[in-house]
Image 1 (cartoon, rainbow, N blue to C red):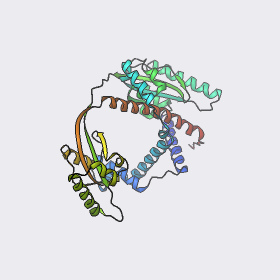
Image 2: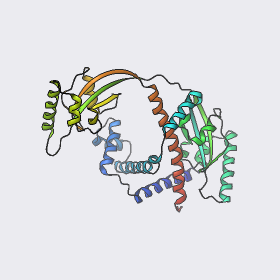
Image 3: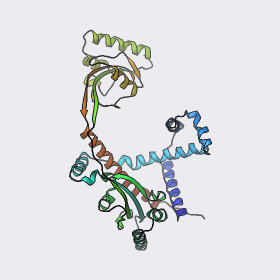
Image 4: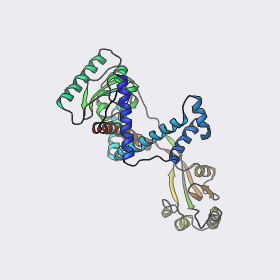
Length: 363
């Protein structure tokens, strides 16, 4: 059974790779090198040191590169075919937040394992009967105490099969909608009866439960405005910086910052607002911009400085401590809903790809 599960995972991966190739998805060497650079940086290495570090662990660098290229390809494919179509509405966020206030279970975390007995989209009566029989057989074996992880490896058609069906820790709203109602009714160690959905029969085991509480989130915010000028073929960095120094001197001599920003700034997002960037929290800007902002006193205007976008001057208008708890809750609710929808849609998408593919096993 383990051999079959491994083969099935490889088949699903190859089906996705072929779809990516047919639809023109290609990962350039630049994209690949950027991803490898990120891997090296996380391991406190230079990119040139990565091949040696992998070799020391018995990993061929060429094979690793191609494996990484394939992983990026599949990520782009899923982003385009599945994730880009997922929509979370403000109303859904409001409804989730209302449920979280009324029900502690919405803020409880669940450690969950899952088995899927897949049913083809156009299943024959015989195929449906076989899947039904298998689902109930697996349920009875799990209920009688047989190891759920071993059953998942042997029988599950889910992407988590080879991990023993382990989904891991999820808050209630992060769970796939079709499973959430089952899970909140289970006690730790209990296995649900098979649940029929369009993708097949689901069995869920609740491993552990733990509580969760919201602490207020107080964050430091700054209010700033800026003027951006960009170098081009005609005006190099030195010329642009000099122009910005002249603009800064005009402001210091009394000209209106907002008026000059509206006239000369090349930031399309803020020029019409007089350069106003509003109240923002940590991480809102690139590091060079944030560093300059943190060094300023209130109403002070910076010297011209460079970022990846061009040359800036920025004025700090104010600082404040802001209770971002509500905003944090909305962002978290959005992420929970999106993740839940992504799990469901990805599972259905993979089943459709598998059902539409012709696979010949040569043993």
